[in-house]
Length: 316
Image (tube, rainbow, N blue to C red; front, side, top):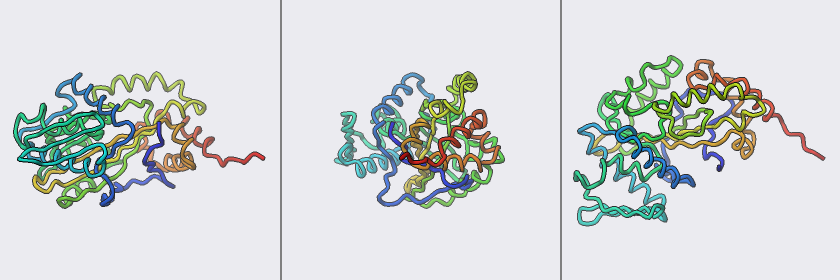
């Protein structure tokens, strides 16, 4: 596995949202070496459990089509060797050279695609895609294959504050900032941020239906998590999150690209990573460690990082 493209660990824990404008040279969607495998996994999940990983409410069609068009434009712009998009005689022409697929789409026409637009375009990108609309920022459509502890069954149709209910007090300020950001986000603008967690599994699909099994696996693994082994047993999971206000519908497109790497592999490739991660964990409030699910294995993790983060004495 390659080194993570992002490593959001500094000198101490940061409880701010940490959003920044997406620059003109930065892509909305990212394509990496895991593209084929992750698209195949998405499609497998969508077939295995129809209606669970992709859902949409009536009335969200305009936003779905607008999001699909934007995503195809972005993919063709930033990855022209792999994707192309054009419009001819009322049709959209999409080519995905990585997968060897070409699609002619009658835009905004029901039945033009084999599934609804946000589900179809979600099968072309590694990101999870969610659409939020209205003054109350309500979740109206999405494809969520790699969710971290939640699913569309639980959240579709809910406004922003209810999506996150019950809100843990430790993240209340961050949720308030997120709500204000979504209200103020101008049309055509994109902001992005990073979210991080540490997991005892590298399973991408951690949606609600998987949690009983994942929690059971963690309980079985805990006795074997030691400072000597934890580097090979834990994984850093990073979410690159983007928020884009769609100019025509006014909806917000929320994209989530999940990256992960084995802890030991990441530390071996990235100088000073152990010290930085140790600093953040040592300054993270206990309630936040509980919220992120790190507390059960915090002690062996800290001891591992303390050992791995010591200055190396050159031999000679």
